[in-house]
Amino acid sequence: MRGPRDHSRSRRLFGTDGIRGVAGEFPLDPATVYSTGVALGELAGRLDPRPEVVLGMDTRESGPGLAAQMAGGLARGGVRARFAGVITTPGIAYLTRTHSFVAGVMISASHNPYQDNGIKVFAHSGYKLDDEQEHGLEQRIFAGLEAGLEVTPHQPLEAEAALPAHYLHYLASILPGSLAGMRLMLDCGHGAASELAPRLFERLGAEVEAIANAPDGRNINAGCGALHPELVRELVLARGADLGVSFDGDADRAIFVSQTGRVVDGDGVLLVAARWLLRHGRLGGPGGEPLVVATVMSNLGLERALQALGVRLLRVPVGDRYVLEGMLRTGAVLGGEQSGHVIFHEYSTTGDGLLTALRVLEIMRETGAGLDELLAGMEVYPQRLLNVRVRERRPLAELPGVAAAIRAAETFFGSHGRVLVRFSGTEPLARVMVEGPEMAKVHEHSARIAEAIRRELGG
Image (cartoon, rainbow, N blue to C red; front, side):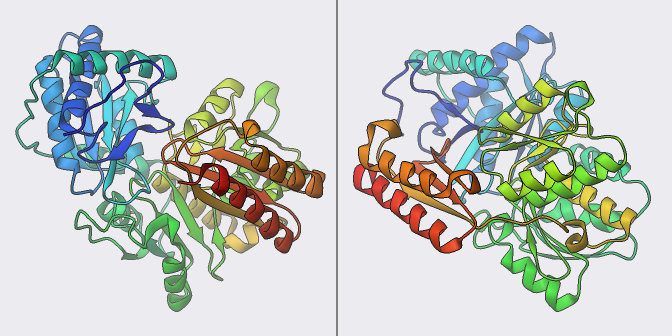
């Protein structure tokens, strides 16, 4: 067992999407997970005399053990853990806000490989904890570690089938009519959507064929799911399907494939949804201004297509929590990320891949148009994303070679392109994004920036 060496505020447990790491190692070692349960239990006890917390997980082999450790810590403080079993992250958010749960905990590492896992905590509101709440929880977690609490895991938890059933019933209830006559191909990523997605769309009348829906604890996201839409693309073309959908491990994101095999990411979904909401007078914003919230990663083509509709694009830092903050601040009802997280705030407090698929299908059914037609007028600018493994994070301005490569790219593209270099919030990576009208130049400048980072920070 490996423990923390530094309990200061500067070493945060929470990243941009909860606590994440390698299962069994700090901060997902038994002592820290148990202490997290104890800390959350202390907070829950102050909010309700008979508090309950709902737990859920994706399909990783480490999930049941982490859930038992978390439930053991909660029980130490007199908090009852209710177990939803395998469920999506937005499913836990929904259950937390619609039932009497003081908080919800999702055990998942989203699109990461099976060795990783994570802990996402939701307040009763259905929103993830804010920075101040996370800091307060961290202090209590480290206090528990310093006290040397004996880890007493809960007995194996028994999943309550009614909990995910409530979530599926809600999703089905918000789609008017049925999907009869529509043929769908689903890639469930061997993750949380493996059982839930086929059940939902078949219940609504669609003809469904699913792949990557046989999780074994280690195959989650393994060459399948939202990061590999080519799998469902092949199926769509072979079957003549109306739509293909690829989900990530916890199904909070979805990537689509049109009838002709076009891969459509979150940017495309935002444009399709914005046009539809605008036509129905439901694309609200500050003072009634039509507004969509997206991140700095969203393609310039989305921004210009929205401008043509009279819709403003508000860019925020990468991370669905920042998208949501922007939406709450401005009153926007639609926001999302290029990666496939899309938030329809009228229906959900977080990105939901199943909900996003329902909305896309509803628009297709109402308009009688395929996804290709719905995306007409969107010119996607060539964009290249590179991940560079780093041994440390230092301000880019302090790295002369990196700063020079970035300036050169910005000068070359001017207003006809974009350059974004940032550190990942969950992995030891520097992410390089270059976008412009010519792919050759995009490749050239992104490669120069990546090489400069490798020279100065390469891990």
